[in-house]
Length: 403
Ligand code: SF4
Ligand code: SF4
Image (cartoon, rainbow, N blue to C red):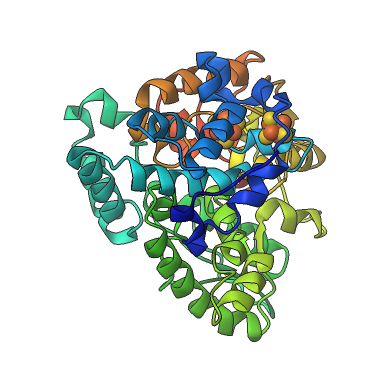
């Protein structure tokens, strides 16, 4: 379809790819059938095709109002539409650019700007987040339900393995997971240790950049990406085999570094290599001899939630379920696995009504077969679902941990 980008956007190199992405869409509407917000709201403007129409109009210079921005904000960036699209439309990259343009044309209120700024000052910083998290846990009984549901109770910490192996993989402890679910990375270290691999923690690494990226602070996200690349690059050159991903939200961002920094003359090549080295734990275990791994006797029947970032961004749908089944776990039947749980980074905080509806639907779809526990592969989904689930919610690696 003919697309003429308005000069004000054509003059900004960051929007270079917009025209090609818009032109790839043939407006067939197949994607609407798998879009969580369209299924909930039934409004074309809250579907991928409707949002693409709105972004096309905006980039062609038509008037933009806060309504355009709101329909883009309601998008979860779950990328279910990308998986469904037969024309390969890169919707995720398009909506990132659409949000930047919409904010330029219809700026947010001061209150909205402050909330988003505040989230960016806390969530991506391990120590700030950790401090608030500890305070929250201490005062949990007196907190309002809205906050309480995002705070899991403290659980017994697993032990780190002591093995020292020649095979090395890297761990970036990230931001929220280190405080909210420290056992996930310890479980990963235990599992790799049984396979003869040392998981080396890059302590000075920071947030992958996802929080800033989702909140339209792209320069800050790029700074964080460059910082992490500088830290892991010498390790990769020294022979580290992979960057181990235990939170698929971070994994999706790490695997996008190559795209995010493609125009950076200094970092473009390194960013591509770092993206290629970032592997979800399920990809790693699929290639190893897993005979040494044992499933906890207490696992029971398990429902597996595959995060959008794992299935639609990293393109690993159903892989955890298949692996756990091969390892002997009894898998509970689940429904609508392709739909988002409503966590979606900061979405659960900024769009609570839709987020909670999606969470309730997801918990219904996960628990019809009466599982003993739910497992997932991303800290955001784990906290979001765990906040209102009657069934315990964990990271799937905890099923393979030793104590
Ligand atoms: S994004 Fe893909 S599936 Fe959706 S309307 Fe465009 S071409 Fe069709
Ligand atoms: S990313 Fe998800 S919520 Fe957004 S348009 Fe695509 S399917 Fe819908």
